[in-house]
Length: 268
Image 1 (cartoon, one colour):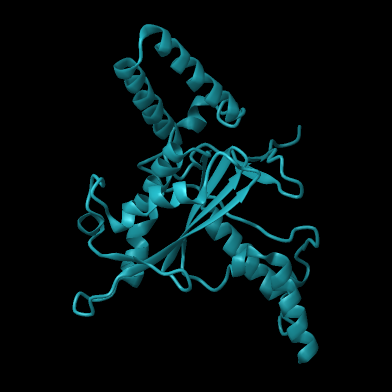
Image 2 (spheres, helix red, strand yellow; image 1 turned 90 degrees about the horizontal axis):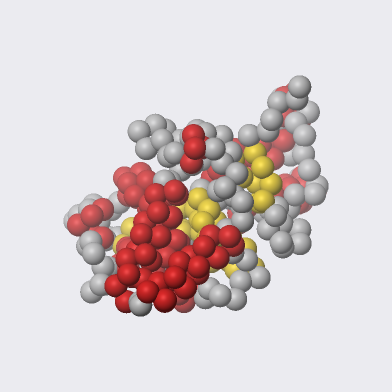
């Protein structure tokens, strides 16, 4: 019998765009089931405190409807797959995977490379861009907020360690929020930015002071940040990644990377 693939396809509903999900147990980078449970608990508490018995029932129906809009992405997973291995290292990081693929494309198209392994490596003219998503969620402000917070807790310490300026320099760790929306009218850019920015810059309503939590100050830099929070919204699906400053990804445009390499070859 053929071996079952550890990946599955998610119908994005956007022409020319395919979402590939990893289904391996232990592949989740954040405890998504805990995030959903926390949101449901908050909604239930709000319904019990503010609504009458009739309105309570309506609110429960609303939650169920929103769950259906998520599709069967979570429902098809086994109990083992839904558990987040908080004490273990994740099996993979899609950002690192895409980085390796793009580095391979560059090496394969390098005319000075004589490696048989690389020269025989398969390539595709049908894939123009590969966008890594470290976590996916429903495209609501509540879920995006909790997922971003969880990803920052996971990846920000290593970014700070790499880019943190000395205390004497009085510098900051810079960031930007990069948002791409497709066929999504219920969620605005301003809603997402106003939700995420206080996590790093702080505000009167912020539960924790970001400077005390991470040990450094943060600032916005749209041209050359130390890291970016990349958010891809496709209808009701939202993919999120924390991307450190790198030159390799070139906006994840594989086709452009190949064309640039071919142009250099012609000029040489």
